[in-house]
Image (cartoon, rainbow, N blue to C red):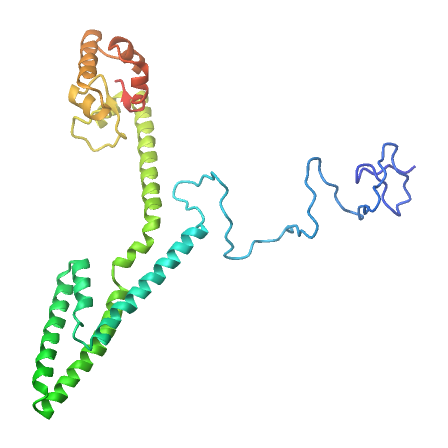
Length: 311
C-alpha cells in the first residue's frame, strides 16, 4: 500500500506512482510541480520574487558591505551606528575644501613674487597661538624686508641684482613648499570632522549617565544588605569626605539642609518642611513618607526618587 505524500500541500510527487491524497488541490495552470526533495513553503512565508537569488547556507555578505540601519534601531553602549551616506558626503566635501585651502595658501608666495610669503604663516600663528608659529612668521617677515631692500639696492650693481634674484626665488619656492606642508597639519581642518563631534559627545554622555545609574543601584544593594559597610563607605553622604562613588545618592535622614537643596534641587521652603518633618518623626523610611509628612506633592518627589536613600 502506498502512503500519501505530505509534500506540496498533499500533491503527489510526479513519477512516484502515488495517487494524490483525497484532499489534494489540483495544480493551477502553468504551475510547476515541486522537484524531488524540495521543501514546501511554511504557512505565512512570502515567495521569492522572480529573479531573486536566495542566500545559500554558506553565503556571506561581501567584505566591506554597508547596510543601512533601520529606523529607530538601538545600538549597545560603545557601538557605533553605520555611517550614513550624508555623513560620508559631508566628510568628503570637507576634505576637498581643506585641500583647496592648502593649495590656495601655498600659492600666495608665488603670485606675490615672495613679497607676501609671510602671510600664510601669520594666519597659522593667529590660529594656533603657538610660539613656534610666531617665530616662523617673524622669520619670513624679516626675509621679505630683506628682499625689498635687496631689490631696491640690487639694481645698482650686478652682484646685488644676483643676490636679490636669488632671495626672490628662495622666498617663492621655499615659502610655497613650506606653506603647503604647514597647512597640511593645520588644526583648522579638524572642523571637517566636527559633524561627528555631537554624536561622540552624546555617546559619552549616555555612557556616563548609565554608569551613574549602575553605581546608584550597586550602592543601594550595599546599603540594604550591609548597613555597616554602607556607613564605612559613607553612601549617600556627599557632605562628608569619601572615596566611594555612589552615583549621587543622598541620605535624606542624615544630610544637612544645604545638601537637600544642592543635590536634590529642593527649594528653601521644601527643605525646611523636610527638616521639620524629619525632626518630628525621627527618620523617614521612604519617599512616600517624605511626601506625606513634609506635605510635598508626590509628582515632585518622583523626579528625584532615584537619588534618595534612607538609612
